[in-house]
Length: 188
Image 1 (cartoon, rainbow, N blue to C red):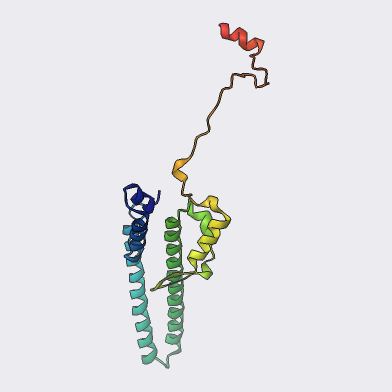
Image 2: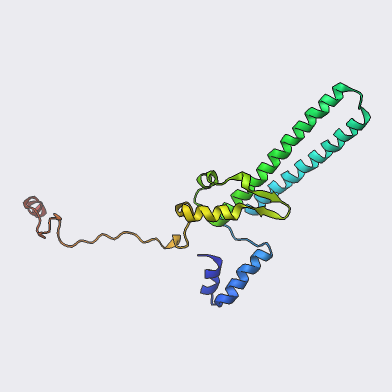
């Protein structure tokens, strides 16, 4: 059951329920089945900000060292090494941002198991910046269309159980009569 259906069951008209659901997105209010998602998101966001601060500090240090030691070849080599390490850290941070955005989007879209769905997503086509995530929703929609079994359906909670019907034919041969063995066994 989604939020709109819940609101309608509470007696709210469909148009008002839809406007409430749309208003939740605009106000950055989300519904999820994951426990402590806000806490985990804030922790990751703090880690990201710490890494960005460290990178900025290192960039400043490298720039200062470049200007003060232009003639020293040994220092220039170290600076180049540090720049390479910083670039590696930035690439790892960007990759982590993409993976976190993918995980969050898959949870919101109702993925049953993140690992197989993530294997179908091309991270190279995803761009994450301060304005949001781009290129991910299209991929998830495409996967939902081609492999819908990987996602929970709208009617997941209303599964019907198979019913066994006894039509009075224990042998299943169409005669409707039990075998001689079954007849004898019923007496004991």
